[in-house]
Length: 438
Ligand code: GDP
Ligand code: IMO
Ligand code: MG
Image (cartoon, rainbow, N blue to C red; front, side):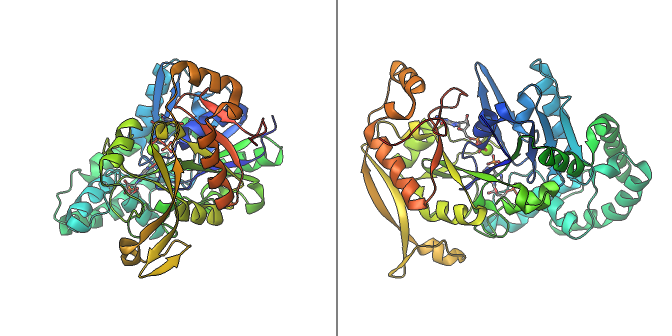
């Protein structure tokens, strides 16, 4: 199979199954590149009896011979990264293929303190962040107070920056009602220590990635979060602080726009969201609880219960448009097995008017009513039936499920490339290899 440069983008509010799809496609990849986000991400990958929860390491780290690149647009928490490296090594795998951009910004201990104290300060208006220091770190990057990975291996630069920045951060933490948790010396020593541990992986990843693209290697860009959490295009301010749509690849990996040839939009067959903010198709009833339970919808990073609801095509069309999605990977469709009816929102009704395109206004979203199309459900399948479906592929899927899939594809205007029917690598129907007409 030929795999040109390929991007994997979440089309909803994250947790669509990007990690599973990336791991599946990484079989053919020479490089897997993360370009945004940080330890707020939680990508769960099942390989036989093993389960990996990756936050910072690109999912390609689990494939032998694949280079795993942390691009300049990622925010790197060295403490968490060391723990992840250890977990992968403990499983008997090597992390020799890891490369970290010298231009990536570092999540410093005070960013985590600030994230938590700012959330407390916002009270009921809180974003419901993961508390991983993401917002404060990206804020410092933009306001040019950031410490970069390259500074961790340059003691003079590190000391200079920390001594200038930390006194201001201490005041800020106190202004938000918090208490600074570290001394300046502790921060310098700890950071320099991580620099010496991680230094061997640090390089100019833009040279590496662009050389690979030019050489015709298979390069896979692994998105974190989802389009509705994008700082510009998501449900602002209930978003994360990075560019999760495909545009973020150019700045976050340092590659020109023409180098992104295919964009796979990962779509969970229903919708989930962790944290605060509008969610038009949310089900605050037993059906929502059913999806949460059956889908195991509890955050990979924080363990929080994910809010659940029906698939929202207003959201998916927004994501497809923004990232130029060329094919869809539909995940977790097995979670809908056994439901009497399955619904999909095509449009919203807001103040008596029909709305096709996702509005920017939070107050409009809070009053929006979904306009649903209903589908007859399909039966749950046994273990044996699942095995037969894995063997026979798309044609073996229940006919009502195929009807649902065809509707999604034609409404969004993009073909389906992959249907995922379980968390494991082999529970993947690859339509790029087979016909998917009924
Ligand atoms: P990500 O953040 O987009 O990588 O997604 P997460 O890993 O946070 O959440 C997706 C969850 O669904 C993980 O626990 C996966 O193991 C699981 N998963 C992925 N694809 C499927 C699928 O097709 N069916 C089922 N039942 N589970 C899946
Ligand atoms: P993956 O890559 C789901 C959400 C948080 C919060 C908001 C801002 O696993 O899909 P942040 O800590 O980023 O400042 O929090 O974004 N959030 C995610 N939700 N999946 C994620 O990542 C998320 N990363 C951040 O819950 O609402
Ligand atoms: Mg996740």
